[in-house]
Image 1 (cartoon, rainbow, N blue to C red):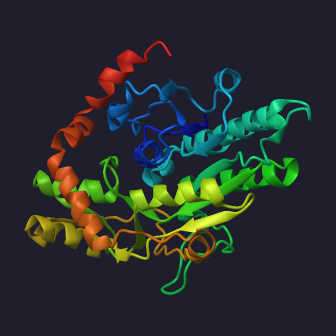
Image 2: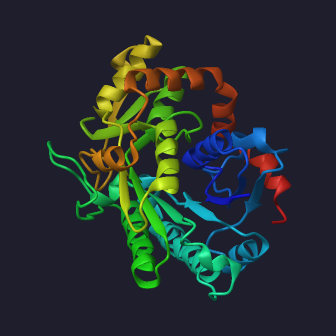
Length: 351
């Protein structure tokens, strides 16, 4: 039985990835490690609470002793590492948290992987590398910085982060690379464009606009609304990560993009139209510091090496996403009210 450790599995992308794993690989044992910050919501995974091949462990990835104990308790075959502080605005206000979680937390995981995968030649784990055991590090296109009006990020684009969040992710990317180059640790890194889909925390652009449309609130848009992002459905992203996990080359970076470039204003107008509302609800607000103007990913390497391309057209993906939030108002309201935390905080208060 293969054992997969998913860090940050209670978050938006992590929980969708666990759903993907269970559907595609029903015999895997899935270990979900999450410290349950504000963005971690175990309601996303309530369907697995009685699944004997799914376990949740409330652990801060910065806690070396707790992570070591986990590795001693299980023969972990692979790590898929999502756990990270990820909201740019919060990183501007609290950069130290992003550095300690995203950089030092990643180092703790790398050290644990190294200790348990680089053992004596006569140990049964010593064949791990040849058997394809790996550390998949999930990163972001934000590490590349900002593009001009033309061109795309490739895997060879120099890293040029412009926020404390993207700087912390770029640092963790380089740390992962160094463990491969220095120690031979089998690693793979993915960098994705902006994700959307079900279970996304409502502080992010798309769910925030949907919620505000549903509750007749103003729609805040940074600056002139001309910032461009490449939108990728979370299910397409999860499928791509799984392909990299299974078939990607060790030591390589794989860019995952949706070929769906939209300005923020275009996106907000699309959501407004879906609700039949007026654009008078849009409120242009002061831009945030260091706001990258444009992101766009070239996913040619994913297509050529792994045969991947996104399944979702943006038009159908955003329609499906809006419908999901419309039909799950209780999920959004539990986030907005904070009630989503009370049940699980009491359940795991001793951990």
